[in-house]
Image 1: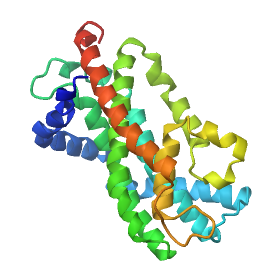
Image 2: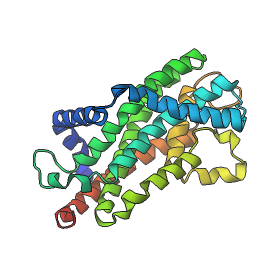
Image 3: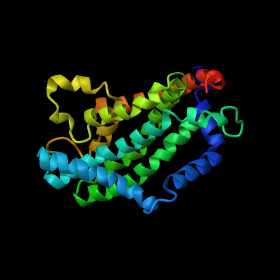
Image 4: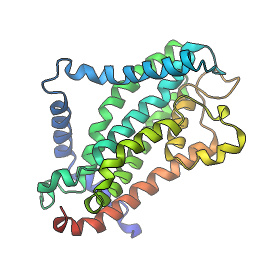
Length: 274
């Protein structure tokens, strides 16, 4: 991508920010329309997942956490679970977003590049509510420190990475429709291998280099370390270790710009294949 055009994706999103906001809000309302609990599901959804994780890892496997007791371990799980749910929702809805919105391919009012962006931003509603609950929980167990403010950087990086990834996957799904069918299996695999219920110290030393293959490894551990802390002897959140933080800081923009470049090239052929 020409360096002079690196600002194109940001200009596109900013120029159409108002209509993007409206369609995202309409999507959120439509998702829960007719539901008995309505928007209450934004709270219930992460809490149900947390309860399952706490039961399996705390009561069945009886995993012991090096920063405290069962309560601290449950909050630690919450630190990884909330961003994972935001990412998995975006992945689930984003892969097929172009093929599901074929009528918008030639729409000049709402550029097709914004369809994946809409899918990602809409999926963040669960993470917004979950993060609010998470900060309360971290404060309640006495681990909240000023380093928690780093989520104001890590979260936008997560969104950038996810948008870039969905730009790529939604483009490929136009030609390889199997992608939208296997995304559920991919999410299940990511849930197993991502650091939600474990910290780096829980992984045997020889296996740690392989963990870095998973991009969620950098994002989730960044959340865990700045919110809850994950090092033995630490009291509360701290600055993420260098390799994790820099991995996140580099990975997200690279994926974002590469995804936009890829989508911009592929969209020229969408009309003939959707």
